[in-house]
Image 1 (spheres, rainbow, N blue to C red):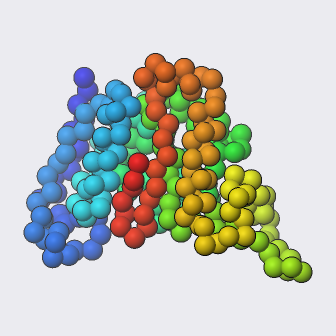
Image 2 (cartoon, helix red, strand yellow):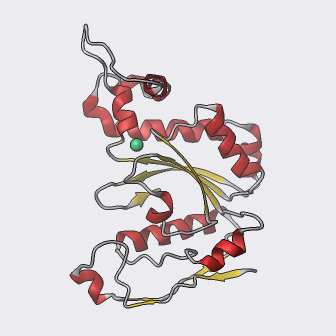
Length: 231
Ligand SMILES: [Zn+2]
C-alpha cells in the first residue's frame, strides 16, 4: 500500500485563516499521514477528517508541495469526484484540506449535472479514474438556486445577458415546486443537490459499481458561515 506522507511540517503554523487565540494554542500542526483510499468508506473518512481540520482552523495543506506535482505528473488518481458550485466561498480542495491529485473537481454555478459536459465529466471520473466516491456539494446561500426560484415581477423583463437564463432554466426545472418561494431557499438547495445525486445514480454503470461496493454517490451541504460540510 502506498503511503503518501504529507510533506508539510508546519511547526509554528497557525492554520488556514487568520491567527486567533484558539489556533495559537494549537500552533504545532504536524504533518498528517494520508493513506491510499481504496474504499468508499475510506474516502468519506478522509473528506470528513479534512473538513474537520478546516473548520478547526488547523489545516495541514497536504500534497501542496512540488514533490507532489512531480509524483502526479505521469497520471492522476484522485480518490473522489466532487461536483460543487462555482461560488468563490466554496473552494473544494481547501474546505476538505486536500491537495494536488486528490480530488477531481467539477464546478458550475448551482452544481447541476443536467448537462452533457458536466455529466460526461462525472462519468469520466467514475469510468477512467476509478474514484471511490462522488459528492454533490450544495451550499448555503447558493446564488444559482436563488436565481432559479426567483420569478420576475409582472411586466418585468429579464436583464440577464448571455447564457445566464439558460443556466437558471436548467436549475429551475429541478426545483420547480419552490419557484416564487424565496423563503424556501434552503429546501430548494437541498432538493437541487439531491436531484443531481439521483441523476448520477440513474446510470446503469453507476448502479453496478454501487452494488459491488466500489462507489458511493452522496449529497453534502456546505455551511458558508462555519465552513462545515454535512454529509
Ligand atoms: Zn452556489
